[in-house]
Image (cartoon, rainbow, N blue to C red; front, side):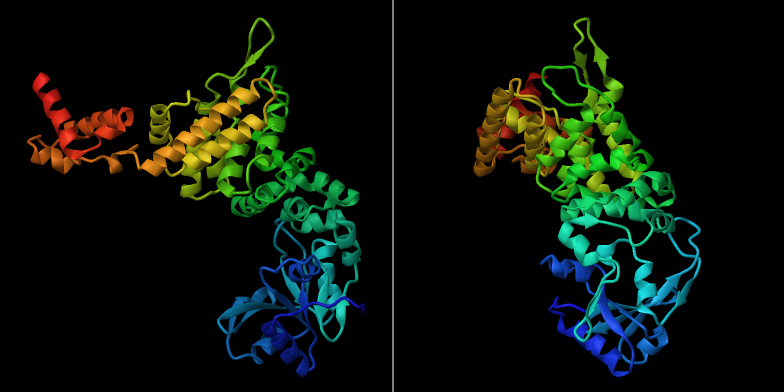
Length: 448
């Protein structure tokens, strides 16, 4: 159909050729075609065919019924799975997500018609070249996300497409076409029908893209209101303080843009100030204050992450970072050791990145001093790590067993003593030697 060619993997060629040899049509379809044109390496290769599921199964040695009721089987070649799906027409959608039934068809155009965006509705094989009925290639060149056919129809079939559209725009650096945007705005409320797990996946992909600021577009289209109303509150909360030049929401967006695209870091920056709207007070001079907002932010972060069904590891790390995002200290080694103990050695490097991103998203008021302090803290942290100084019980030179052997009775006193000895070592790291610490304990015990 045109000069455009894709280098198909050998296994994909084999599947397509095997189907063609039996008189069936077969194409690579969707995201793999889009990514190949963009010079990206496709995550997986999907194949669409005119063969019925049972016909496809008859042609390959190893297959699995992954979604046979929707026409999808997985062909296994050299330990790799490839999804092969029969051309289909989706029936009526009843839950904003799944068609009530699917009808298989021998017509490729009918299959491409049911797909979400033009850039995902292109098919390719070596014999016919690119099949692009809806102008997907043109939209790729123009960097546009546009629905196949009528936007309202596409979004009413599957509400998750609303969030997917914004996510694709964020990942690819594309713009949303006007009619597509209008459809999103109109049908955003139907996202309430979508499972938290699916929303979580799309949100994380958007946040960890090179354009996390597209959450602003999601807000403007009424999308965040459905699954993240706390973000809308931040967008509507001004910060009348010399330290800030944006609303809480805009500060949050800039903070996300200032940090590398890591899931824990981006989620932390998204959630770090969510407590501010509820903690806002105004003084007589008309200056806003948000005292203790980190506590409120931690609570909200926990609620949001649980609501969106995040795993416990993510929940644990992000909430600790949110709680400590505003932890500040004079740049002295003992202060840094204490902070490492309180925040946790595992996430302390994250904490440093969070602080820097936060400062860079504030106003320029005292920015130089703040950054100088942070740089000094980072240097002290590097030195503490290099010297292997003790900041937690696991690095303490004495254990509970050592204390018992030295004559202490088992009980809660052991934990309290170890904690006191740790505090001594955090102040004076050179004292972290077994004999020395036992000596300190014995002298203390005699005094009592």
